Length: 253
Image (cartoon, rainbow, N blue to C red; front, side, top):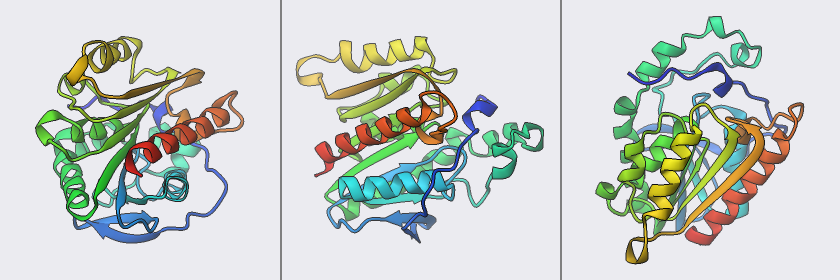
């Protein structure tokens, strides 16, 4: 059974702006698509607020425009959406987070995530993946050694539901980790384990570029919430977006 997502992971603050992409399909899933690059694609696995949440779509638009990519963000939750107003208003009692987490557990959604990445690999020369919170474990899974070449790079922001085995089995895929200081999901202990497995124990021919970005003084979720009323959060969101854009340009151009 997956660990229930705590309410702090779901609090969010809508950015300004209107998403500019369209709704298409990928691997038979409804998908938000933005960008026009025919060579390089990015699979975006969002947090539990899902593929329709404006913040996620605006981030996808930014990646498409600033890194020159075609970005695909499928609905991996089978049409189910959490009550956004309840989340924004802090009415946690109105949300059945445990059941939602069980219906969308790793074992339930992994097949669809892998299938989407395989379709992009068949269609594009270069393929990357980015995932925040819930999407973090999915990016690590796509970069696993046994998947063998699904990704050319990955970006993981304040990941949830990750376990030590995700880092034990990660392959030779350039990876960026965006890690806020305060994170009950990606704990200090798990951060230390990940750094040791991805960096300290990979030498020579086994080594692979890892970009580890630490965001002091901010908490889990800041890279997508961007709440300007929380000290440092909007700045962290902007820096996180810029860092991801730079990484994606480096490996997918």
